[in-house]
Length: 208
View 1 (cartoon, rainbow, N blue to C red):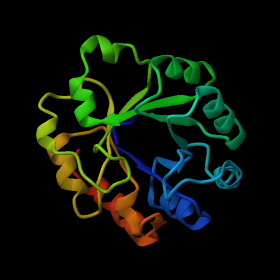
View 2: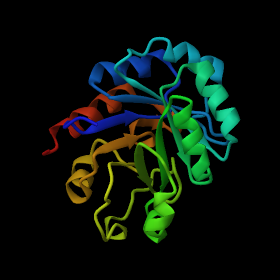
View 3: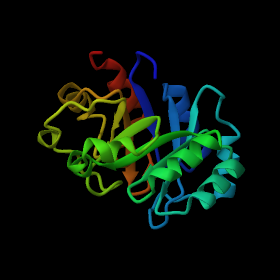
View 4: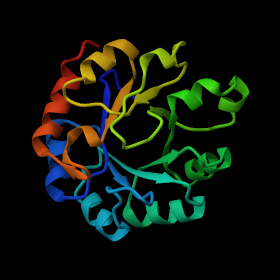
């Protein structure tokens, strides 16, 4: 991760919004393959969108509760660079993903993370940690009071971020990166190009 704060725009499903995120300066674009989300995209459609993503931009697949063989199969077909695995994936899944050549993000709620012991955390061989609100994609923010101790690894803040609150949340929690989905939508599941640009501008304006 560079000195500049890493930015991921997630839940994309159209050429217009992928291009807007890239043009505005996002470091990563995310595609949701977990079932039950209004942002879930079919692998064939994601493959078309990923084909237009420059090599220096991370193409991230978001998975939850799926078997690792299925995840790697989808990721390979689509052309993803990064796998974001939520909650229920096993520690061994991260090793499998990395052995298959993917960068990995372990995603879980902040409250779950603080309940883990050092030994539990050490079982997971991932590249980045993502801390989210209790319900991913709900628009809820992390309560800064939950993170009573500094996170001792490179991590990404997610959950309820918007162009209006992201600078304050960065200043309070000092993450290495940020991830947004619902906070740049005009309605649930529909991304707004103007909000994407405003979010990235806000993040880049935050003190380092």
